[in-house]
Length: 151
Ligand code: FES
Ligand code: FES
Image 1 (cartoon, rainbow, N blue to C red):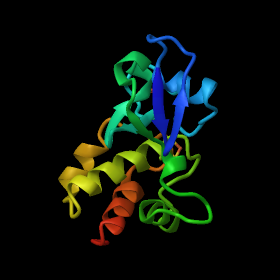
Image 2: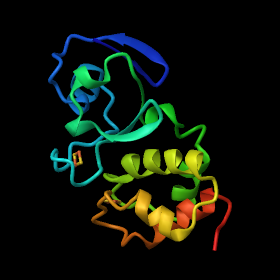
Image 3: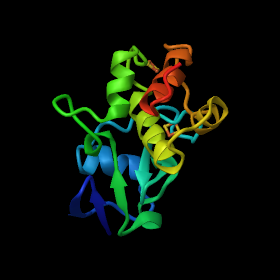
């Protein structure tokens, strides 16, 4: 099996039924996708597969053989923040940060598809992402700010 992860090609040893989450974390050492519920309900493991948000805990490696996978490591880093990361940081949309990588990759995909989303579209795009800390208001405001529509 092969994957392109954040622009780097990898030939993998994991079996076809291994969850993508485990391949990323255990075989490749890409640790931003978090192992939360591991049953599709929390969004903490979300990554982009060919640009679309996917629950990596529910995605067997064999189903994405040859795909391009993007995690937050491929979106920006502390020295070169993506505008969505910048907005989350500036507007205090993260506390413990466990949900944040999944929230941000889902937001990046949303803004690519819909550059000026309304509040309803933002809430729909992030509806499967559980945050135990923030109360969601600051997260939605950060997405609005990243879209250039800070209100
Ligand atoms: S860990 Fe995948 S949805 Fe919760
Ligand atoms: S910031 Fe802690 S779970 Fe969201």
